[in-house]
Image 1 (tube, rainbow over the protein chains, first blue to last red):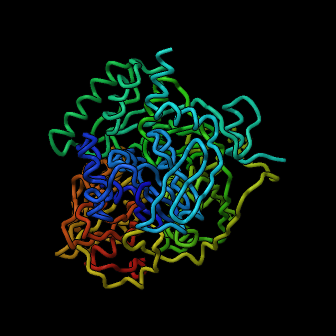
Image 2: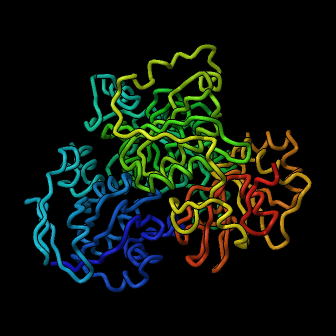
Image 3: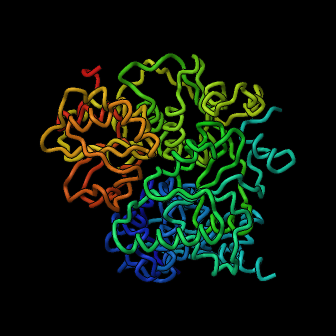
Length: 160
Length: 416
């Protein structure tokens, strides 16, 4: 199971990945080093593959920048569970195949130090505080997740 | 059951009845990208595609870090220029033409009933003239370039009704911030926001753009005013042929809110959230280092006039830098013709080139640790305009101008 990093409401894209880096930092590992740097400067050094971010309402509000998703993905984050997501961020998660789950009950119950894992196929989050189920994604979304992201989905489409 | 504006646009594009909540794949009329075009074009080889399906639907505007702040940005811009030439993209606006959202409206890409998608969260601005306009991600923009289409969920609609009349010293920016303060930064999450005024056509295109721009800060998918006579006149139409796009009287709204315009007062969004709204009087006396008039939110001629009205015959406090960013070259020229350039220059302002300026913290006025900026922009997130230990307060052009004079946050009321 992954460890949980818990944050509050309205975690915005500028703290997820500062705007000043958006046109200059393109390397995935370097992007990961800036993840959450203006909210939790230690995050980049503490995070391990499989860890999960849990947050409150409106996660990812602000800019449309995909680095705000990619920085977490390249850090090894396995999923983000929040009470709700800002809509472009949610789309960017799908397009980067980073599971984003709007589960208010789980988001409120889980805390830093808890452990969890997401079983996408079964539609369940198993945690040290119990299990939380979620509805399947719409077919349009599932197809992108299944391909491993929008680039891969489009690549399959163009290869045909 | 009648349809909302969004349901009508989606149904028209899909060629069948579409209702809120349904997911449909649609072809946008335009896909807007800016400096991030450099990153988007690099996705084409990853996808395995080489050409844009509809180059005439791409609009590319360089505005975010213009002129290039360093050689990395310069190389990005260069790659974009080569790309648009190679792909035959004619809707290209190079350094200095304006902020992308201003260009979309000014150049009439935004048009009633059109579906406009852009790889920038404030693409919602185009709803001011009755377009359905929403922000998307970069990879999605690449996808639209090569396939011409994208899946979208038809949003529920939240209706915000205005009654009464704004007082002279209160503006559409104060109104937008007041709404955000009431409903919160996620108050319109996933929704369309329909703005309407029951007491006459008192909202200019500029006002509407400010409100639709800030709909993004309410969490909205899109914001819009139904296209009326003001829109028809702006577009040079002799008659309003857009009435069919209005939401039907029996359309279903998920929420309706009303605001009395006469009660709107100058407000400020304090750090580090756009919904942290306070009456300007509560923050009066807060010392500032920088004041900014401009950006896609408030860089239009009406905004510059508002700042000039306050600053005529007055000077900016000696410890304050007042930076002015016209939203486009057209706005800049108009300001020159109206004498606003001189007025603000005499007051001690620094005129900057049309573009996004320091709004995203990359150049042209980034903040040092501990510095405070009052800005007409739309975001005050921690670290956005430079150092994480700096502070951004958001306000109207008049409030920013009044604060620049006093050297501290101040109400514009006494200058009217």
